[in-house]
Image (cartoon, rainbow, N blue to C red; front, side, top):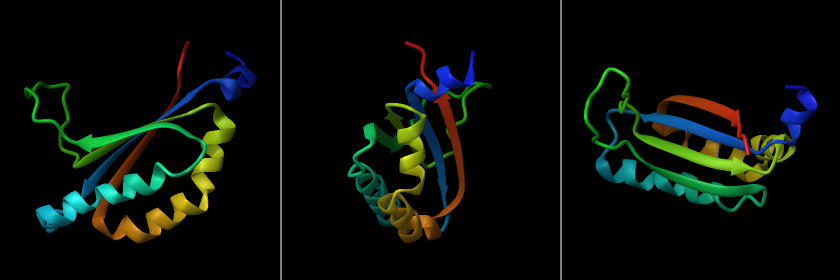
Length: 111
């Protein structure tokens, strides 16, 4: 696939957050406000988030994270705008002290 085609494709932004173990349940629940701030960014097509599910343990399942975020962008350009958007950067600055690890997966979505 050519790079030009990738730039025009929808982007799914999938992020896993491991919050610090010493946080109270209230602090963990309040972390959801981070995602609510991100919802206000105009280039975000959709945004969902949630806590790790207590699904059946299998070798391929990793539910060790605290929260996940799934949002979509119309294209690579909108994703790039989001990455440097003041609301995104301010939310990171406000909440980064609560996490110990973050992993981001961005992918092009096939139609």
